[in-house]
Length: 160
Picture 1: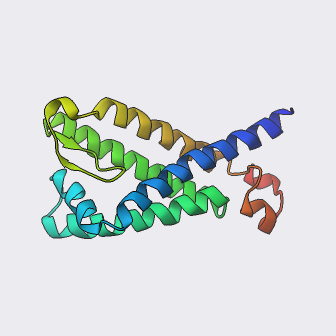
Picture 2 (picture 1 turned 180 degrees about the horizontal axis):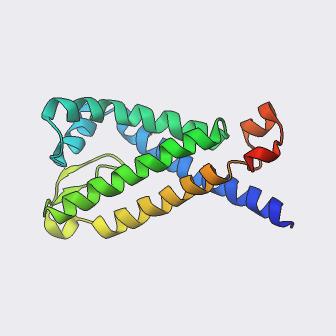
């Protein structure tokens, strides 16, 4: 396999991992908007009303951005948004950890207060940093196999 083809396969894997994770995370929360809002409110970083709107809108955003990444449409932009979401989640989890909050991240549903031994901040941060790296790969090199971008816009060298 050529180096270019290998990079195309890595791009596909990055799309499936980041995009798939976003779609699953959003789908697990989209039909429970109140639970999602409570999970955002548990971080205690924004006014109650703002946290409520963020909690309602975040699952929809995750599904939309994740779907674009999975199908490879507007890959660079959607991966940038997905990667920035992951970095925002890292900051949110890190500040909760630093402040001594004992909450479930709410990333895949749930959320809210948990017992101190139930927190998984280190694992959650590592996971989200890995997902942000998938986004960074796709921002730098959005070209990959089986992408809608490739079908619609061809195999442009400037997008490599």
